[in-house]
Image (cartoon, rainbow, N blue to C red; front, side):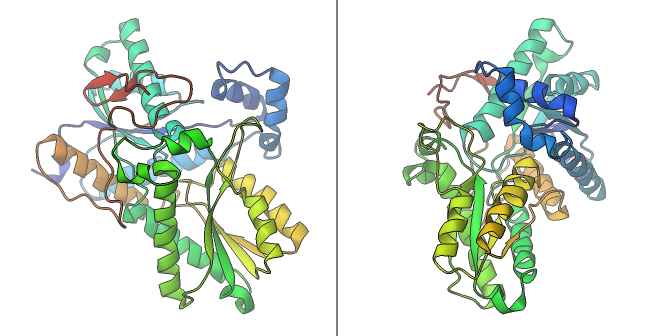
Length: 385
């Protein structure tokens, strides 16, 4: 099979992301999309959106997705992979249903989906599949030509793929090097990710998944694995073998009485300062790009806390549109395509947890408020709780 057709039976790739506002007038409508069905008053959304207004109402995420889109197209073209790449969002333009309409109008019927979330959890995996199922249902009910034949398959989780981990190792070393030389060897590592409710963390992953049997379920176990891989690589590169590190959390948004994963990054910085840390390097392993939750929660809030404490900090960059990440996506596309053709391709993954499953099993990452149909393979199925 030629490189141009190595993606068979698939005929397109869809980059599926969260979306974000691109101006002050977009902020409240965007937040209404994010919180639809929760009955949150508009006045509260204005308050919640205050950090967007600090940046002119513009989230970096859409621009970063455009960069990733171009990086994917370039990598595919450079390697003879004749696979068009489209882009759709969950909560802002370009919206997912519109992206699927464009795919259908261009004649595509077998589509791979790259969701910009690396780890197993409801909002980062299953909810995207629910969005896909809802969009497919709507298009079929509208009678959009070709919608009845459209099949979407989500690429497996990529948290432990070398193309994701290795750029993070490099950016962590660069962040350490940005500190004054006198404190580099004593800088501690804080690996950050989005906090989620304890209940969703505990149920993340699939029943029978070895990672799910660990405290915190697959979500925490997968992050700890990536943190360990980076910490060990940093130790080897710097010669500092006893550098302390910890997995911490950010961006909590839930009601105060509901337990969420802790410690928060700002609380962690206070604890590290009290313990006499020379410096802390924040490594946002839970995020694919430097979007608002990185720019505000780390570069604004956490830095302000560090300045208040007099604690030197640095922040590692996310993978963004790194060519190694684009190459990893190409490898995942070729891997899944070969699997669909009945072949047994190599499944690249670092560490002890191995490559994730292609099709999420029944009961994987259940929602807290009941189940909804989720795209899963040839059509979709209500995986249930």
